[in-house]
Image 1 (tube, rainbow, N blue to C red):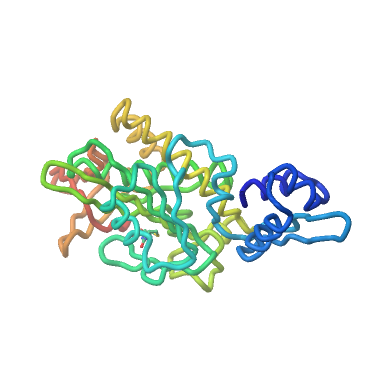
Image 2 (cartoon, rainbow, N blue to C red):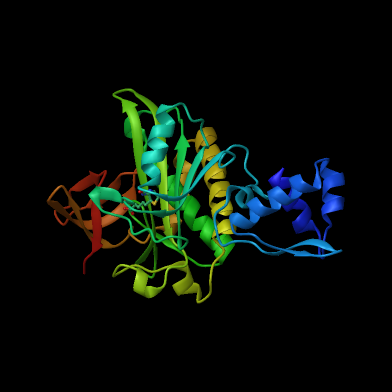
Length: 318
Ligand code: BTN
């Protein structure tokens, strides 16, 4: 009912009376008033003018599920959203939801995280209302060792979404850093619930620095606002990310990982560079020449030896 009232308020350029809403929606005027109060409590500014009615003045700068659903062009991704103001990590909630049988496409969303986590045991800075912190549940028919490709697929989807919705060019630093001019603006964390030969579900965690000011960012990081020099709408960007994720996931299911690898290469800032990868205290230095079909990074060492790494931290070297 709240969503219907909101829909009418958004459609109306001027005011809409309580009487009209009550007739259209077939509930009492007191019922309408109760829902208007609830909308106000979640941040919508609705003015009430005697003899004229209600008017929507402003929409809150929040990732409210009803705002995301409005105009979302996906079949299942993000169709069910669990929304939180503050959580420890959306990954914790999503892993639990997966265990409880959450369906593919279910989204966990938070305005802030107290213990956001990144790859390799790092933390993810998650100030409230500034970024996008989301975890998406997938149930792919893959072997556990094939799931890294979903990380790359997600990184490609985020880059495509940022380009289309915000108009900024981004790159991917292997395996999952979204960067602008080599500064990190986003990252992907993939976690699994699996046995040796079966994946029960995968959680794709995506974090993006959207409207963070410089002072709120770690060194070597940036935000979309810093780069664009204007505030970025988190709702439309999130919608676009869900759409791109679903499109690329469908491509992957129909045609395998090859077309995604092609897209990944076009965004890569790693391939063709001389790099050093640190993986469990081991270093491998050489030229990053390609990625494999399973998402691994292929490196040509100075000895001419070709080596593949599946995880690690990359730095460019001269
Ligand atoms: C990385 O680059 O190391 C990955 C960062 C992933 C951060 C996101 S924010 C939403 C989700 N919840 C988390 O705790 N982490 C991921």
